[in-house]
Amino acid sequence: MAVTPAVTFVGLGSMGLPMARNLLRRGFEVRGYDVRPEGRAAFADAGGRTAGTIAEASAGAGILILMVVNAAQGEEVLFGEGALDALAPDAAVILMATCPPGAVAALAERVRATGRRFVDAPVSGGVVGAESATLTIMAGAPAEVLAYVRPALDAMGDKVFHVGPQAGQGATVKAVNQLLCGVNLAAAAEALSLAEKVGVDGAVVLEILSGSSASSWMLRDRGPRMLEEAPRVTSAVDIFVKDLGIVLEAGRGEKAALPLAALAHQLFLAASGRGEGAADDSQVIGSYRALNGT
Amino acid sequence: MAVTPAVTFVGLGSMGLPMARNLLRRGFEVRGYDVRPEGRAAFADAGGRTAGTIAEASAGAGILILMVVNAAQGEEVLFGEGALDALAPDAAVILMATCPPGAVAALAERVRATGRRFVDAPVSGGVVGAESATLTIMAGAPAEVLAYVRPALDAMGDKVFHVGPQAGQGATVKAVNQLLCGVNLAAAAEALSLAEKVGVDGAVVLEILSGSSASSWMLRDRGPRMLEEAPRVTSAVDIFVKDLGIVLEAGRGEKAALPLAALAHQLFLAASGRGEGAADDSQVIGSYRALNGT
Image 1 (cartoon, rainbow over the protein chains, first blue to last red):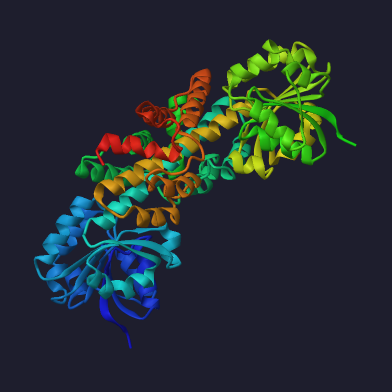
Image 2 (cartoon, rainbow over the protein chains, first blue to last red):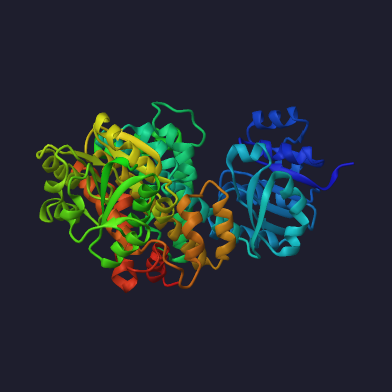
């Protein structure tokens, strides 16, 4: 017997597909939808049910999970494509995409106006975390609403934090997380590019920094790829163009100056503008190489 | 029987005193000197020999270790106080303080002009590393000179890296290290202050960030103290005012733009200017609180 409530999952990309698969593995009845037919086909291959339209996928479901690209897509799914009206009258919508806090709060208000519930629950952990069900999930929702969706969240992540009762608070914590990721990544690039400029062996410097108080998760993960000519792409430069944009929008919403995030954003923007938007985000070091002529 | 060569150690402060003690423990004959009588007394208490003047402490020694505050003090010890002329004719000078690469190279040239050898060997690891003999040591020197001083370095650190043959290369790698420490620390402050501004619980945010890709050594070590009212001082704001100043001087020497380091420096400078120079460096978060009114 399937675990209840029935779940509709919209957005079967590199993150969404493994997350939806993990719900299936925990016994949830999941109907999946993606605008790309290959996303739907991959979910069907994993034993999931799919549907031809979002409204059909959403019919009567008790939980709708949105793992779409941005808040505008979430709005289109809910209101343009008719997902919200198709859900059970007391269903909960879980927005797990990285979105600006203000946009999340506005969506939540419109969802609640129809009698449904809303959980602001962005994730951290990337594709590896999505596949291994070890995502960090930052949930902003009233405690009783979180309790209702908790089994579904536990199927996708092993670190579920209740960061506050309001929609937008999860998004804010995710923005804080991305602020640090982006600045730490750009800082690693600035440090390694200075070593390059001076002609000290990058591999030796990276070994030293990785074992000292200079270390960061980003340095250890992305640093080695900064020293490669054309590294494999684990996350693209344009993801940080988007995410640091969201960080700055969160700051703007609070009228808070975030000077390091703003500067890091410029370096990713410039990399994207040089045609490197689809390259691995470690290649933000190219902005320093361009700037300093190394 | 004492290990040879005899070592003179100048600068018995919070770092130098435990470093000199570790040389004693490994059997080196060490004569210590510090301008502060209490520094000399503490070394005598540890079983070390001291002397009333630097020249006396240096007479005939095969190695002179400088753990002074800056390059100007190193120059004064070597040339003003007569340490260099008092050393054995083939002695090696090891400069372990954090100094600008250009100043280190200039000192090295003057030392070598007298026939002595020079090792540029700054350290990372703080007081904890100094006490437990687990410092990271970044040595710039010809291989045969490094081999001569290696037993002494091994007595003080367990991660001795040969970063290049030239004086100034060790200082550069230390600058690269401090660049990352300073930016990662300021970034942690920017992130936690945004969470504060929004009213999300700082302790929860810190727990999330510490276990995610946003994590850094600085976040995990200094983050908890950012949430305290008046934390104990492990390293002062003014140390980063100095060290990021050295980073920027290293960049200036290479004509390399280091925008994140420059911005982080401003935040530490402002904290010092508000009278917080002697506070724990985690209190750079005060610059964000002042700026954003939290």
